[in-house]
Length: 196
Image (cartoon, rainbow, N blue to C red; front, side, top):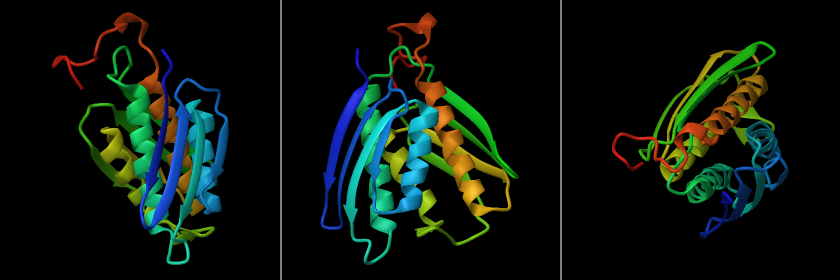
């Protein structure tokens, strides 16, 4: 069974298309209008082994808020669609990822319950043209529409670029672990409730 999805979101503020394959090889085609966000989404694809395409046009003449948040929403919808009923997945994933002086930890649960706990104190307000306040908006959009519980902690870091990149790499690796098929749970929803 293929775990693929394609989702389009059109509003007065943004027009976004996300296509993905959860069992890909890490290929990406990214055009968000925000260079550093493209760089971060490329980390998600490469380290999550997800083939990912994101095409976005947003009201960047105002700021990046709507674009970044709506990409998070659309990515979350696509992941939820691709993973389906979650039968046979590991469900939980975690990763610690260093980048030079920065170290981040991400833990994810495909629980069916959206929740974000994020403890990241960026050392700069902007990375490239991306307002660092929007990183949490991206992840809020993602968890609310992927229906996952996500804990993100930057344990240390002095360079904001390194902090953010270690977060996105850890997110990718944690998601990859959670979505990996569990050979001992084939066809079984990993919950005592029988549903996620």
